[in-house]
Length: 168
Image 1 (cartoon, rainbow, N blue to C red):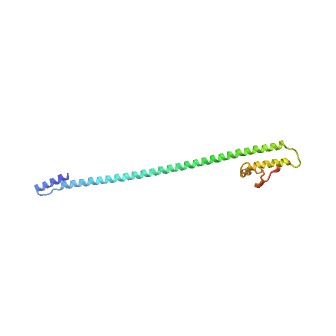
Image 2 (image 1 turned 90 degrees about the vertical axis):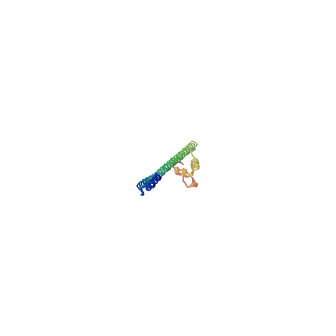
Image 3 (image 1 turned 30 degrees about the horizontal axis):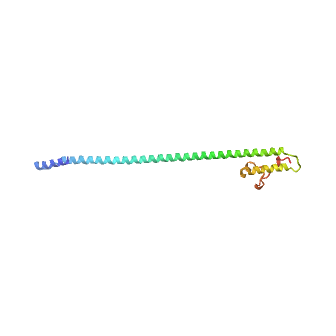
């Protein structure tokens, strides 16, 4: 179109002797305006794509933070559950050990009462107390035994006997 307009202008100059550049200026103005619009559209498109990428990045980071929080919370809950299970099993094991210890002590006491022969020296009572002390102190961990049964005798660990149960 620009070449056709330029050719027409040259022919017009040859015929009339003057330039008529109105058509060429209008073409240039339309061209500039269209170029400006294309530039603004391209700029707006680029800005829109950049904003869209930033928004997607922000959303991705936000989702990752949420997932990280959920994972940390999940591990914390699992840790608490594992801790409670461990404490529950430990408590249950300690109760079973104490029940076994109590049964053993009852058996020793019953044996001592069945085999009890009255004597002035109190040998049976001392022997039963010694057996009870040995079982009570050394069957389980000494710390736990002494904490739960302070009347059990264990001389090496500084715990005194409770002789109130002995009739001698």
